Length: 357
Image 1 (tube, helix red, strand yellow):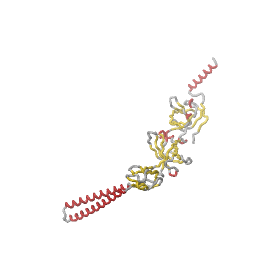
Image 2 (cartoon, one colour):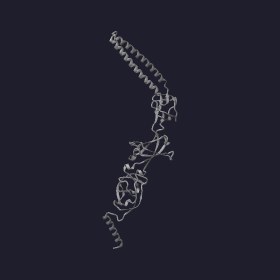
Image 3 (cartoon, rainbow, N blue to C red):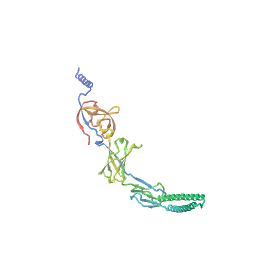
């Protein structure tokens, strides 16, 4: 038998022996890495625009000719302060007419009451008929009803006159003026834009795949794009748990204090600390993932000096890292050479990469 044939038979014998024994011939030399979770710094960055909590396009409640402008763009106003007034001459005349009608109704009611009281005194002495008493009582009731009607009519005219003036609904800054003096203003047509400058927020559109990783109260670092040297540390204080059908994103809000140096309309970058531990996700290098022919994946944890296989699901990828679920945290994982490893193989560890702090 030739030397080549003998060597081939000996190699086949060793391979069969290894298969029957169920352990490799020698320990595989590997490097390991500890998985990263949220507390090791997994972050999501989103660009957003600073907006006001209250930003209203104001309209008058009455149609009319614009007669007076009390404010201009950039002015600071207080709640209840008049902003503009329409020509109210006709409304003033109608109010005066309503006042006159109310005065007449009040005098008629007083006279009807006086006549009723006089007749009632005579009736006690049997000097008048009971039917006359009933007639005067009805007249008094009618005059009181007319007085109430005129009071309501005057209240309507007062309100119509008041609606010729537009008042500020909250403290803020006039951001835009959409009309000029002498123009005709229609109801529900915007005339001014008012912004509440001391109550700001960021509105973030977060991709839906991060829904489980961005809880209410998640820590956020905000950096204004105009000044990268200043960072604001805050948190998410409102989440709208409804995903937009077009963008497949949900909305989160972050309150911005006035001292942050940001104004309405400025752009800023929000860096969100993702809560991977809440969803059981771990981050490993791509080299630690063993891809299966059927499309699945697995990783190998170190357990008692041997490789312990875990079937995992790939959740996300970012640069050279992969987020997985289905593997336990707190264990070291084989970093490279996983293609040739099998469950239970002996391992010889040459180096371990500690988790980032």
